[in-house]
Picture 1 (tube, rainbow, N blue to C red):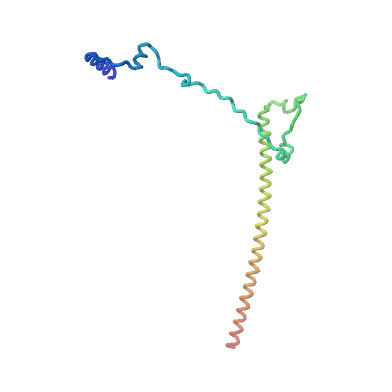
Picture 2 (picture 1 turned 120 degrees about the horizontal axis):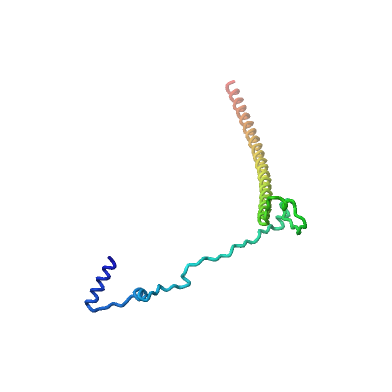
Length: 165
């Protein structure tokens, strides 16, 4: 429908003698030239450098609090292979660092959890002591109130006895 309409329009234009300007697309089509391409506009693969993270540094104050097993150890190069190196399962340096780091973090977490438990225990003891003191005060107060009540009842009974007796 579009091509037939364009051909009809072209025939009508020729009869009237008026010739329209050629569009840029018509000129490009005649000369077999494609649309201009800017190098900046072309798609290309994105090249990214792999992210390198700094090694996690455990502060010396925390290292001092870690148990010996979890402390980072600086070892000099060995001449002979260790038993772990001779084994079939090989743990690479990165994996070994990850494991030791996880062990250190777990040790720190355990120490903190122990401190929280101790703190909670102290708080509970403090609250229990406070509650015991309050219960003692309440019992003394109620004892005193009962004593006053019985004294007043006794006095009232004495008055009634004198009046009717």
